[in-house]
Image (cartoon, rainbow, N blue to C red):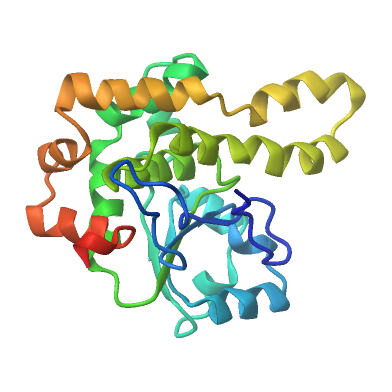
Length: 241
């Protein structure tokens, strides 16, 4: 499976379509996309996104990140519906004060408990989005974006190994580019920074089942309505359209 998309100069953009469903079939193409921050986009990349059918951008970054690395769609109303939802509190400092530090393999599981308001708001934005593709992103398209992508794929009942595969693609997409900008003494730190272990996804899925009774019940628990959950699932699943 090769889901990486050529939107110059994004490093970590891909379509969540084409993943195998547990009941058979595949997730829909050109419906939900994930990427790194869009400040990298060239004018050709902007047009490529529009041509691909993307009509809504959901920016998961902290406000301070938007100021430093604004995107074309953030600055140019009318080209695309742009929604900013700071997934992890109002700032990096506020988030670090409110959330415990954990090993990478458990990060997604902890986020399910500590990032519920942001997750609810992002999922509601997905449910309420107009027709057309939705692209969501953070800075590297790794942690915050990876969490949202994994939750969407889990709700669509994608095979767990495929969810872990999608999560792990970030390692390959970012490693060479980040390594090229690093000093030799930073190589190991770069490897760890971009590492997206499959255990992170399997632990998250187990946490969802054990503590919430699965993705749909989790979404109900954090405040979404049943019709919103069906709309979100419909973005990836023929049976819910």
